[in-house]
Length: 292
Image 1 (cartoon, rainbow, N blue to C red):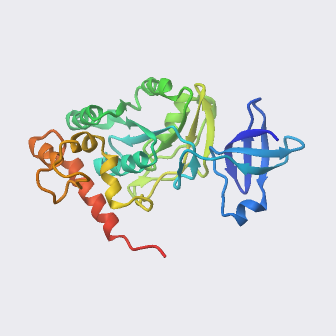
Image 2 (cartoon, rainbow, N blue to C red):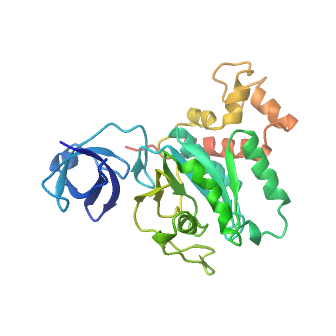
């Protein structure tokens, strides 16, 4: 039986792309419901079809990772789009995204949009410099110079990428620049709510520069439902680097003496806000109600 990649899921149908470039509309077999397996966009699947109009997914091949919100699998890279203004740039929200992405072993690419709306760029440039220093790629763009967005194109080649971020930061606008024929719907920020209106209603993979890119619905909340408190430190790359010099193996970097991470924070080698976010994330996980 043929294999393919699910590139779109909508209203109970899964659209499967084969190596020959043929997309077949498929339904999931009842066995998935029985085994509590839900096919996701990004899944490699085995399917059966007599024609391009109708088929059935027979099996979902093993995934290397999966995200819950958005529901997508086998992701190589997450393009985290954050605006400089409208909505205002938030290191706390960015770090929350980074932790969730790192926990899934997905490579982040930080894109800061709407730089032209800032009256003073200095503080944001400092943030960008720090994230680059700890190993992240950062691209800064302006709505007045859409050509800048094309700097992202080389990062897309041969990868499956997901675009994520708050609503209203310019995710669909980014895709419109990378692939103009998409003509995706965009909306401005809601002045009443102070946040963007959702313009993307489902997850769909689109081919751009020999890779796949998913546009996804905006995020209104992000919870660490699958992370344990002692796993969070592994999602901060600068902590991992310094932890080799901690006195105690398995140091949590909170109460232990002779902690290299806390020492680096005091010396200014690790940003104070990053450590504060780490501490608050750990406390949040410890305080969450157990699931039964």
